[in-house]
Length: 95
Image (cartoon, rainbow, N blue to C red; front, side, top):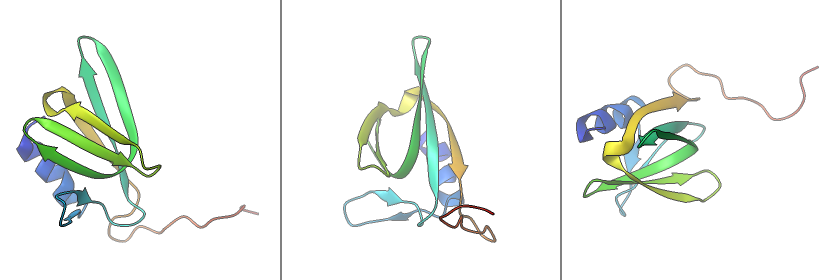
């Protein structure tokens, strides 16, 4: 993945950069990173913030986990939830 593609994904998700350099997604919005290296693929789910420096992509999940990936190994980002006009899911049972 190039920096331009990452920037386009973060712009689409309406991410804001904090003072520590993390691009944080708006509340209720997460994404999945898809990475692959030497034929092994890895989806990294429920990412709420990323930071890219020197060819590395640090990704922080909603569970507080931090993943460090080679930016060149990331090939896609899927945005989930939120967005303009989207309704937030309500907790509880449907009935």
